[in-house]
Image 1 (tube, rainbow, N blue to C red):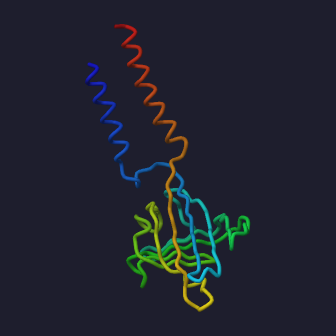
Image 2 (image 1 turned 135 degrees about the vertical axis):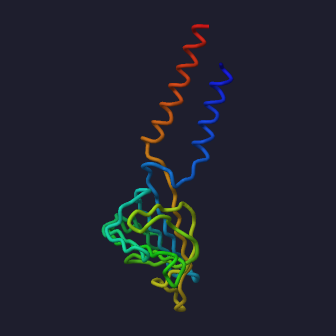
Image 3 (image 1 turned 180 degrees about the horizontal axis):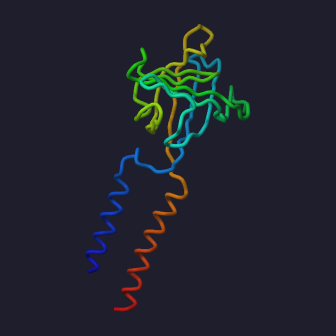
Length: 181
């Protein structure tokens, strides 16, 4: 009997650990945009969060989607600029001249790689690091700077709490069986 319970717990843990990141329930994605000019004439770091499965304010099927009011923390040339409200737009990698594009009031990022999956009305961001070029911010010679957008996924505390509750219930069952034996 103990072998069966142990095998069940081990199989459940393996399924949870190997589940694709697109199956997360209610997590938040943290976006970190870093833009440093090739001649080091400026640096820009922007950070914001969106739900893992957000509902865009504007979505055009096959083209892209946008969020109208996103709270963004900005650091320009090492000086904290505070939090601003900004518009964020993402283009579809299959229809754009560029494989993907991120755009806001202060920067743009064009590069390769698929940043989200699903339809534009219900996108799911794919965690990872995306490198590209920022055509909005040019260095002193007029060349676009290199930029990076990093998407980091973190589960909500409710997901972690549910997982721990399940493991505690199994531990309680095993302890009760040991006490009766």
